[in-house]
Image: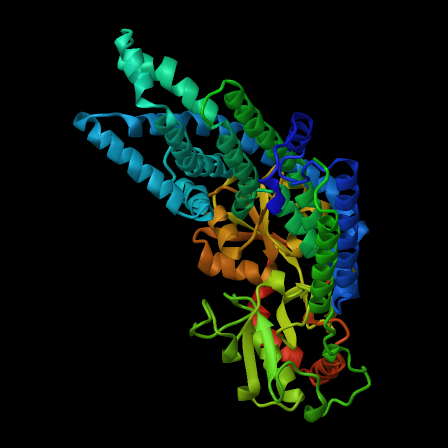
Length: 292
Length: 298
């Protein structure tokens, strides 16, 4: 695509190409669309022929793509998927709050706050360093094993705690990147207007920082949605566990496909929304005449 | 602005098509259909359809739990050692091995997790022996040998908990029950007991046992021989509440073969011999005898 650089896009084409952001269908009018369609069609046909002609295809089709398996397992998996949705919705709220606290602690200036900064760094390192599945198993089976009074033994509860702890580590880093992207002059200006350090953070820094990191935040939210499948390792019947049950009953994998469809039905719209937000943000900054 | 070089999209499209053709070439290599030898082949040692010539490759999961497998654990095997010939399934596997004309050291044991035992594609084992229950749906994907045991489901509970005083299947309804993933125990809970609380299904035996220990579930449904191992070794202070009356025809466990593997007929012949001469019964007496006495939950 070397020709992209050597011509100035007209506004109409540029608008259209933004609509198809990520698909790289650059503005070539109707002819371009036709060629893209034809090329995609040829590619798809060849791939389909290649796959269906392969030696193992009959077996793969029987085990993965049996419509009966997929459709018969779908209702149970959809019911179980409600639990995944509940988990990621509740967890995301706590993650957004906890991560912000960690990020702010990490951004505190001055030697006095060193212990808090150090704690925040250690936490973010651990949360991002330990495999999620281990944390969930450790909390889900380990915490209730202590048999402390008042400590819940619910596996969903502890799995949620695990997800919150892990994802807050990632999200705190996202927030921090946002906070650091706000030019120091912003804080200086706010302080010179008489705002306290906290007021400057609350009124000036964070609003700008968070707006800039909304796309990566959504990115982590998508990750969280998929990781709710790890709760199944504790024996809780969520969508993935249910699909394993169905798969093991028939020795086929159609149920996995049904589960994948459910996850994708939620994550893909969110991915497109993320793309749109990124594009909108870029447009706004360009329109404002500022630096992108 | 649409005056760019006309040939470039066409060339690109051609390239894309070429690329796809190359991919197709790579993808469609036909492999020799090794596992579809005709079923009428003879069962003499040299004619057997094996994954590794001259050796019998038998698969099971690791850890392999008593009383199905026994012996002192030895790397890489945990909890027991399938190579010991101890435990019911290990003993049956070796008895079949002898019938097929192999010596004990011509057997290779392979760790194959339950979930992998039915994966499509060439199987890394001649047969898998892992308490797999015969089911019609499963038999469409893999082949089962003739059964070598009929199992009953049982429920294990912590002593002194409310569920421990239940004496009937119906009395289990209000409790939270668990089973291991891939077992028919879960189907049993769902279809027969129909509890009011959503049951739990654990990917591993260890997870299921831990949840019972933690009282995160009230009762664990497993096959009766496994129940004896759970109560005697894995969960202190637990007991077998009872076993469920056998289904008509019973729930039967069998070895798993790749679909169409001719070796199965030879193993079935061996199993028939072992059944006929009383060896199977004797091995059940030896390894599973104490795993039959438990009150029946009506």
